[in-house]
Image (cartoon, rainbow, N blue to C red; front, side, top):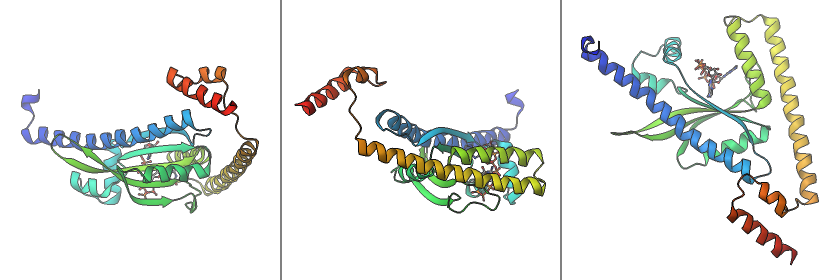
Amino acid sequence: MVEDVPEALLSARDDVARFLMSYKFAIDTVMAKVNILNEEFRYTHDHNPIEHVSSRLKTPASIMEKARRRGVPYDLNQIREAILDIAGIRVTCSFISDTYEIRDMLAGHEDITVTEERDYVRNPKPNGYRSLHLLVETAVRMSDRTLDVPVEIQIRTIAMDFWASLEHKIYYKYAKSVPQELLDELREAAETANRLDVTMERLHAEVREQGDRAGTPLPGPEELRKLPLADELLVALAERVNSERSD
Ligand SMILES: Nc1nc2c(ncn2[C@@H]2O[C@H](COP(=O)(O)OP(=O)(O)OP(=O)(O)O)[C@@H](O)[C@H]2O)c(=O)[nH]1
Ligand SMILES: Nc1ncnc2c1ncn2[C@@H]1O[C@H](COP(=O)(O)OP(=O)(O)OP(=O)(O)O)[C@@H](O)[C@H]1O
């Protein structure tokens, strides 16, 4: 029964709920911007750098465990200061150059302030881990205050993501004491994944270059009607451009 719960406990529960909510809203805010980029690229560009987007709010258990590991007192203000990945977003891209393109677009956003960048793409971790990490802050307006909330954005290619998710599973399977042999193989696999990324990037650039040389033809009226965003206005505008070009 709620009446039996001491006032201090109820108040602490509200503080924790408000604390976590601010991170959830920060994820929503940054995700909205990533989703806009994703949709815009999907409909209006010949290449969308975004393959997949995910987000996670760190669980209270994971926050407490990280605080314990780092010797951070169990105090919401101190946790807020010390643990900066409670709100996390992961953007998976097709190519290495896409990761930097997405970084630039997010960093250039007026509502996002980059506080730190860790480039594990150019400077991979000793175990082979690659990813571009941005620590950003975004303003979250709540009913009685505005908070600058940190969000960790991990930007990586599909190959980097594939490697990291397997490595994460292995790490947990072996309760964090992975046999040396496996560690060596994982490092080698990270290099293989990187070679794949470099090759795909080169092929992509070549295909693009050939496409540019050939000149991309404008879609005809039939193709235009099949476009996902083909409303009357878009079709009319495109038909006008087409007819002006053929004049
Ligand atoms: N699979 C995998 N993920 C990693 C690795 N290193 C970093 N990450 C991911 O990136 C996050 C941030 O890592 P870092 O940039 O090293 O930040 P950190 O504060 O020094 O490290 P953490 O205490 O792990 O947060 C981690 O919480 C993981 O989600 C790695 O070696 N393997
Ligand atoms: N920025 C992020 N965006 C999306 N998912 C993430 C992000 N960071 C971690 N994850 C995923 O969230 C899951 C749980 O993460 P959890 O918070 O428990 O640990 P962690 O952040 O990976 O590690 P640590 O506690 O050492 O910081 C994992 O599957 C992890 O891959």
